[in-house]
Image 1: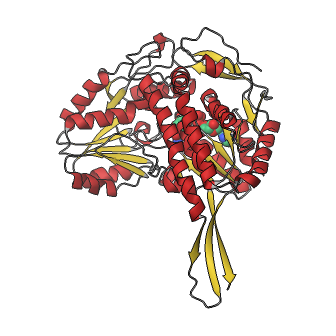
Image 2: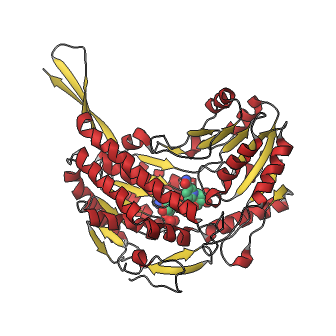
Image 3: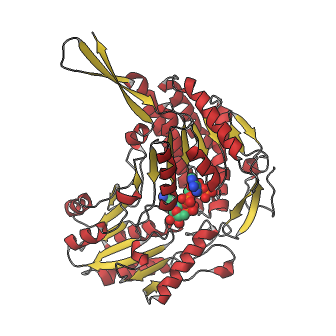
Length: 496
Ligand code: NDP
């Protein structure tokens, strides 16, 4: 089925969309989707569909896994240098398409231009980073092990784990996909990628690049579809690991499906991350960091620092400044170049945030600013919102909202701030702001979180680790840990 456009596009994304009639990429070929229920690409600034296409069928999931399995036999034997060359070409392919991809992300995700641009740079940077790591692998394929017994020696090998299934969400298309795809290919794995049904179009570009750079057939396969396609991928016997980014509820289903076959999973799940503003914090710096930590990407970040703990000594001054900053945020869609915060990406998120606002009202939460949806605009727009003195048992303090909704509480002592920060089922990320770097660092060291920012916004470098403690997930992405997630350790014991 071809893409069908229901209204003129405001943005010039024709090269990515208008010429695309096939949306399933298997064994190096673009195919028509054989799935029955069409997927609609929605513009969240208007809530209108701008494209429609057929997803993969269950048979195509099986064919994609078969292709990945077949391609693994030779891809695993390719050199790291060769794989690095392909990864660098992926990075260039993304950069070459940057203007179109930026427009597409603005249209399909509701991202402001600057955020869409950062996404493409981050995705390309991830491919460059893993290209560099891949290029070191030929010299590091095995390591000698001294066994300490005459007549024996040993060696440890690092083997690609096999064909893998990669399931991604919609909040950072291309980026979180790069975090999985680049290390998987670098390690020598082949992949079947299931994009989110909400943002498949951007992810299809990886198939375009694969075809353009001559990536061997079957090394990357892309099967757009909804949850049933993801479930079929998890159940497929050919795949040896599933790496998933998304909600805890679906992550549990992925883990259960993997458990049936006793294969490993990597899960990048939710968060309710704290930000601690210490007594000596520079107020304007703290405001900038706190606002970015909850309003970037309209708060749709697994790492969003949605629980703010501020020293009672500066709570009023800080809160006043944060509220002023929040009120000044320009909310708007891709028709407003001055917009600093776009709409939520999906209708489901819009409903979730709207329900959150209703809960806040019905429980008399102290709302300092925001707390309303902006339905009159016609898209999925909500106000950047700040609540103060939120009871620590309240769902807005405890549950992931995935929207621009900040809950504030005060603390009396640093010990109390640390205890309150760690009092959550999650443990993905955290931020500490304070003028004494040693103290801020000491606080950071006591937080149960996979990634802590000290006096800086949520910048993620590709050579750092990404992943959570507790219910925030299993495993780590990025850095050498991201590569190891796609490698199995094999030991040889040899008679000499
Ligand atoms: P999901 O966890 O449902 O979706 C993530 C991916 O899993 C999508 O590709 C989805 O397909 C796929 N999927 C759905 N069901 C299954 C299944 N049974 N087996 C395998 N894959 C499946 O997230 P949502 O998009 O529904 O978002 C819901 C909430 O999740 C958000 O409100 C937020 O709290 C959290 N979230 C967390 C993210 C993170 O970065 N950790 C990212 C996005 C959301 P499909 O798109 O068709 O549903």
